[in-house]
Length: 218
Image (cartoon, rainbow, N blue to C red; front, side, top):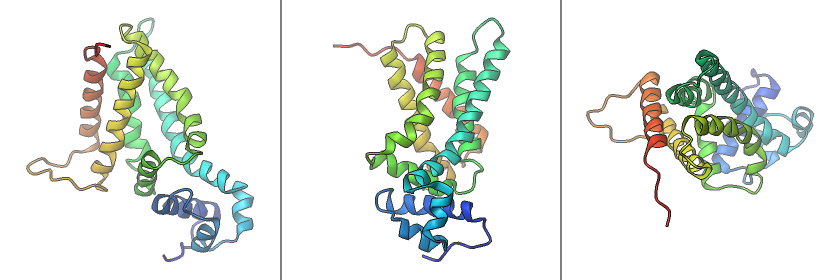
C-alpha cells in the first residue's frame, strides 16, 4: 500500500489512514506499526494527538458520529419547536433521524466509503470494545428518539420501539452502501435515486414500520 500524502495535516493524515486500515483489516487486525508506516509518521505523533490506539479508534468514530448526531438532534429540536404546544409528526421525527445519515453522515463527507466499510465490519465482526466506542454516541441519541416515538405511538411497548427502530437502522446500513455505489445491485429498469428520493423512501418505510400492527406474543 502506498504511503499517504504528506500534504495532509499530520493529525488528519493519521485519521484517514487509520480509518482505511481499520476498514480493510479490522480494529484488532490493524497494528500501530501499520498505521505509522502508511501515514509516514512515528509512534510519538500518534500518541501526541490521540494518546493510544484506543484513543485513535475513538477519534475515528467521533469525527463521523458527532456531526451526524448533532444534525439529528438539531432537526429534532426544530421539529418540536415547530409543533409548539403539540407534538411533531412522526414523519418529521423520522426525517430528523434519516436525513442527516444521508446528507451529513455519508452523503458528502470525505472518507465515507472507508467508514461505511468499517461500520459493516464492526456490525458483522464485533470486537470486545465496540460497545465502548459506539454506545456513547448512540445511547443518549436513541433514548431521545425512542422517547418521542413512544409519545407519538403510545400503544407501542418499549420492546416494540426497540426492535422497530433497530430495523430502521438496519435499513439505513444496507441502503447507504448501495446508494453510494459500494455495493452493486441489478437495478434493471430502476434509475439510481438522488438523495431526496432515498430519504423520502426511507422515511416512508420507517413510518409504515413503526405504525404496523403489533406482533402477538406467545
